[in-house]
Length: 267
Image 1 (cartoon, rainbow, N blue to C red):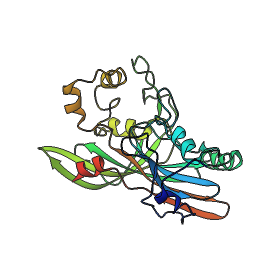
Image 2: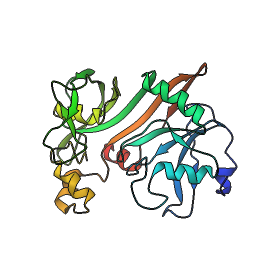
Image 3: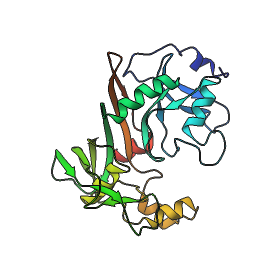
Image 4: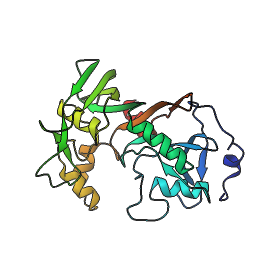
């Protein structure tokens, strides 16, 4: 195993499922010295908080530019297999297996939808109805300049999202709502599309926030000051805070706190 900080090394024993650790796995190559926050670790699993703004799998850049690369740095000679994935700008609970066998078992579990997930989201406007369920089929958004953009379409895959209001407030004269969101299906960008579809896009969403051109300008490094003002946050306000499943006769439950930028916006 690769060298690590003495603080992390002193607390690498398994921790009970669902109990968040304040440990931060470290390497000196990052400005703040951290790879990720470890939520739980055992001989078979490594559960971490994926930071907002970090892709799960490498596209380009250095060894710190993706979560899987950081996991491999942390584990050294041990393999790492991501079991679930989050969008680049979504923070939260991410599970990695330390063997192909465990990855296969958990992968089948996730595919069978025998997993509970709960997210936090900050959206524009005051959501009036709570709780509520959004049922809208999703599929490729034809004609979009953004290749990864999907949308609501009649011939799309059935998709259901449940939500509940936890807080409504105003900031600089604009209305916002903090939501607890539970996806009942697992379509690409499902939560983001459904919330935008009902008129409450996620704050900071570069694709579904009203101007998908912001996403193109972002990936090309051309975001304007006007874009940044409109987005309000560096990353969209969606956090994967809870994840649970039953595996090998044990109920596993993991929680992760939202990041300071998210929490600060709620106030």
